[in-house]
Length: 289
Image (cartoon, rainbow, N blue to C red; front, top):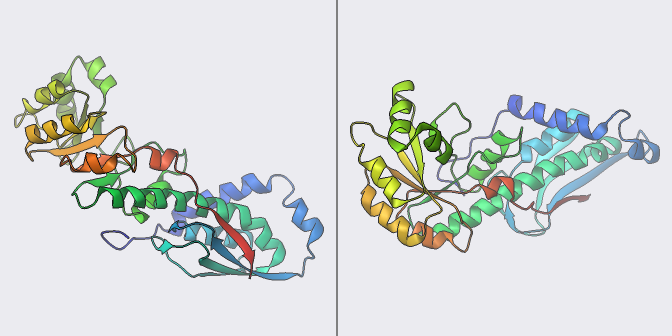
């Protein structure tokens, strides 16, 4: 699924997310439904099954949801994050105290469905962009508190990560340009203030703005330009003007239907916000084994 093996996120980063989700779900009195109905000594075995085709992601979060409730639960992954899956496939098997399994079920599935949905939609875009060189990238339009795992899901789907926050790269947007008084002063101030290892990208809405950026090369360089809401014809012209000197990234109006034409313009990256803020979940459930 990915260009390189997908490195799992460490449990030390994932566990707090899972613990917070479980605290939210258990509330002040725990699972009063399960505790009222299921005997304390009942044991059960179940499987996590997908009801849709897609790409699986979030198995470690699901595992931790069960483990945080009851460390005696046995969680056996039958797939790995990034695997293509088909409707009816079993993703994992869980065995242990029935009360524990039922109390952890929703949080485990919430993470698994959400991240598998992101991975699946990313995969569709990646496949639609072939055979062109453009890479599908995410943005900072993520669910508050879940950025690390949602960006991990993008990688599981074959995509690539843009910056993780405001502190790891400079991205000069339209409002920065407006307040700074233009493209040139915005770039010049950024370059004067940041370290030599920090990359700079600037967003442009028109070919005229792009010309202003390119006119500053090489004395005051940028590393990438974000070509926002341009038509395929404008993107093709922009790529010609850039001529490989800096990274060309397209954004805006990107769907599975439009991405082939965008990729065909020769851009290097295509940034997509909706894959993290609006991707539909992948339907996954827990069924009796």
